[in-house]
Structure formats: structure tokens, C-alpha cells
Image 1 (cartoon, each protein chain N blue to C red):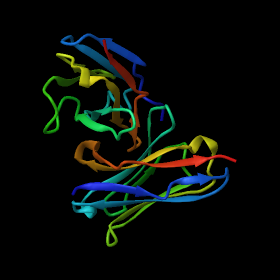
Image 2: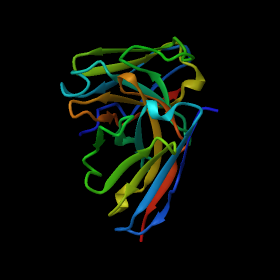
Image 3: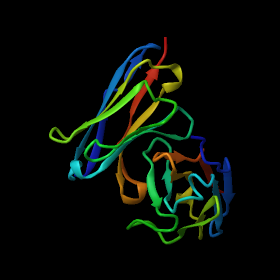
Image 4: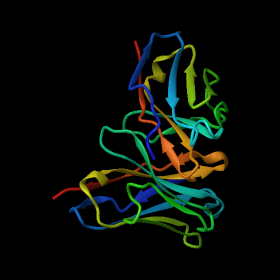
Amino acid sequence: EVQLVESGGGLVKPGGSLRLSCAPSGFTFSSYSMNWVRQAPGKGLEWVSSISSSSSHIYYADSVKGRFTISRDNAENSLYLQMNSLRVEDTAVYYCARERDSYKIDMWGQGTMVTVSS
Amino acid sequence: QSALTQPASVSGSPGQSITISCTGTSSDVGGYNYVSWYQQHPGKAPKLMIYEVNNRPSGVSNRFSGSKSGNTASLTISGLQAEDESDYYCSSYTSSSTLVFGGGTKLTVL
């Protein structure tokens, strides 16, 4: 089955860290750029970060730059998001998302919830 | 990286057509034909409905269409059906090599 499965979400205190993982299946992971997109409770979608297929190009939203790090391991078929210095406003469902040519996201995971609260 | 501007809500009756606008700048919507539209039902992951301004992925109804003029893109849904009631988001590639989403539009089918 072609799918993306996120894990690693949970409750963390402000200033803490969390590492999200995404496990793809059913397609050749190493051929695609990947993204993290988040959605705060009751709010809209917010693009967080992207990484090219070979990790040669990495980009971040200004809101997370310097705090979050995206990475991937094509040999292990995994995508990661290391989140440091977490803030209350980082509370959201985090989606792992596959990007196709022309910057369209054609596959989304089910999301993992991250709650930053004291 | 300001969000693209969408109306908060639109509504229409079954069978009617509605249009959702998505306004950006020359650095995103106006500068590239890389505008996509996503449908998101409550509690679900988004679904790609339109890409490259006016292309439909396989399996998406031809009642959905897209267009662009200047810095504003639009999604039109014709022959509204109850199942179309959902949240809709536009997105665009930007000159910073990032993606930006719109704030989202809640479509109500009356």
C-alpha cells in the first residue's frame, strides 16, 4: 500500500525537543522531495520545511528556521523533523507530505499531534 | 512568507457554481504557474484537487477547475454537491524556493 506514516508526536514543555519520523511505503522514497506541513488546532495549513531527494536542497519557513532540522535517510526509508526550542505556538498536527514535480503535494500522512504546553 | 489570502467562507446551493479566490504577490502566485488547490474534510489529511493552476489529478471530478490572473488564482466548483462541503486551501511555490499556503476557505453547501 502506498502511504506515509508519521510518529513521534506527543506532549512537551516549552523549550523542549521532539523528533518526528515519517515512514513511507509503496513507492521509491529516494526519488521524491519531501515536506513537513503543520496545522494548528482549528487553523489552516502551514508549510514547515522541505528536503530534496538527495538532501542537497533544504528549506525552512521563517517561523521554524534555526530551531527545526529536516533530514532523511534514503537507505532506511525515513524522513525526520528534529524540533528544538519548542514554543506553545508550535502546537499542531504535523503532516509528512510527498512532493511531485511542479511543487504539488500528492500524498499526505495521517499526521502526528505535537502539543507544547507547561 | 505571508500566507496567501483566501475568503474565510463561501457558500452555494446544490447545482450552483462557486469560486474561491487566492491572492498572493508577484513573488508567488503571480510569478509561477505552480498553484495547487487542496480539499480537506474535518479530521482528515488534505487531498490534491488542482495542480499547476488548472490541471486535475486522475480521479478528481471535472467539476473542479482552476485559473489564474495576475497575482490571483481561483478555484471553481460547478454543479455543487453536498460532498463538496469542506475546507479548501491554495498553495504556491515562491521565489524563496518555499511553499506558501492560503488561510483556507470553508465551503458550505446550503
